[in-house]
Image (tube, rainbow, N blue to C red; front, side, top):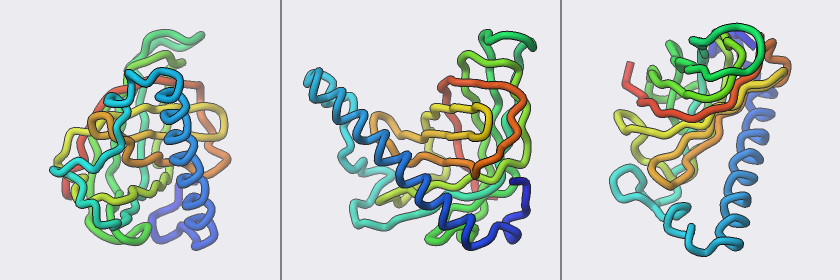
Length: 185
């Protein structure tokens, strides 16, 4: 899926909308299950509204656009690798592919096989968000054959899970975490 933002069809947007919401719901349920087993982690996984970046008023935003993932590691089997995450064409708004144009600069460090993917269209839903631009965010990145997911958090609060469409031709695998910032373009 290396289309321009205007080439993404409504059906693809609807598919990614469902896929992103399902990934977000699974991440929340996994956190709740962990807290049920270990109540002392409740504070660490708090989903309460953060006053600086979230309004608590139910405004739902989309993050959508084309993202690139460039690894700095050696080829072959899994080894320590840093993947640089960037976007040159992305939007944060009330509808996919509309709203404020942004760029993303970030990284994730973990185990990988020299990933190099460019121009991958991804989309995610951010429930109840007011400010995502200029805020330091935490990432968990997962790349495998056929898909890419980028989990975005601010502090302990899960904000969104960006997902790619099916059929991503990944040249390897990667799992890791890091951080980044969206900047207005």
